Length: 114
Image 1 (cartoon, rainbow, N blue to C red):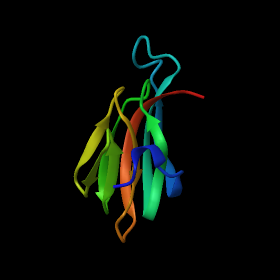
Image 2 (cartoon, rainbow, N blue to C red):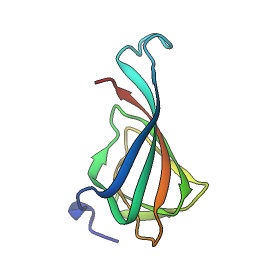
Image 3 (cartoon, rainbow, N blue to C red):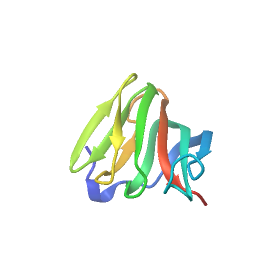
Image 4 (spheres, rainbow, N blue to C red):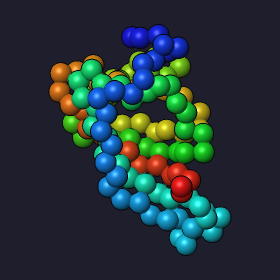
């Protein structure tokens, strides 16, 4: 496990927007927010960093292929296909693929529209 304070910068990551939905017309009080679904591919040795949080940006991740190590609170936990994790207001983490095959996740979150 790498030191949490020395999480590397993002490398070997491709992000593809799959869908987005403006939540303003859908739910009262959600103006300026959107529900977003992305496919994130992390190549072997790749990192989704640096350390980042999910305050005001809750989401869920589901692993389709490969394995991703989630580093948070000094603990590294590896997730493989068919499982994932929530990313709530208390989540501060970074991700890496320490495997030998590309890791692919589906990430769904609520974000402020830009």
